[in-house]
Length: 370
Image 1: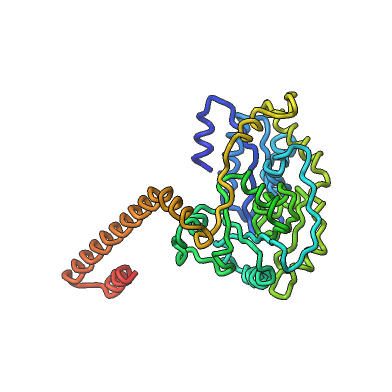
Image 2: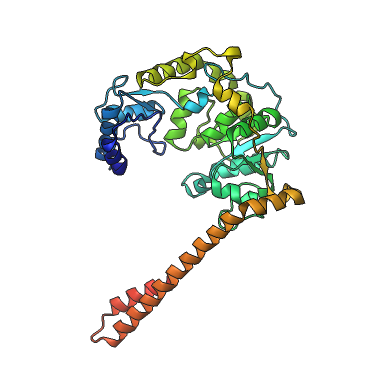
């Protein structure tokens, strides 16, 4: 944040923050006393406000934090949610009405790194149990290393193995239209802890249920009326059928038009021109025309599910990336070997010196063992 603040101060042009959010685990409502970087936050916000009339934040919790720091709502900042929810302007697709059953295609989403979080195990058990109930389920990969893992022959699977799902069920996307269209045509229900995995479902008219584990996900789902379930109430004894029946998936439509109009007001305060300030023939914007002519990649399925022709295409396209990653790995090994060599020399020098400290020897041996 300090580097960003210094950079923004040097700019001779306007600088706008369209959306920014607080990162914090669920818990206490107050932040000012527990965040060690309040000064850095203020420096960044002040730098932006010198170049922009107002800042857009993701949700009410981020707004409360900025209030604690002395900033004024609707003067220094305003809550806008996530711009991705305004993909279709002041409307959202009608939510599919489905009867959830064992043949339904349920899309699960999560984050591999979350497996290390304290209190995440009950959610993992919930996910594994409910995945087994839907043989047509899919798991959406949303990070580049995870996409590589399914794009090639289980590339680095041992290093990034997710305990919650069968890799052959994983899918991913490299463009948003493919993601939305795939969900629109193929998916019946989306559930998980990743907000944009569920936003993609909503934009495809698919009922979505979010299980937030941090405040940045919670405040977005809360602002946009995306159905949520408290992560502390989810475990292997909870049925996805029950959660589905209790959720109001049409809640996302409540207040959406007003939220969009507020977002437009925010953009106008930044003196930004939008397509909604103009009239286009047939309602087709220049962006719509360009994107309608694109050939999008479509869904990326697991390597095991691809035919021989597709596998060959993948290896040819990925070869430069794999080669670079192998070179990076080689450099890491060489660097570690050089460190070991230096430590061994340091240990030999210590052995030759008198008197020698036992603790010093032990420290060097410990380094070498690592």
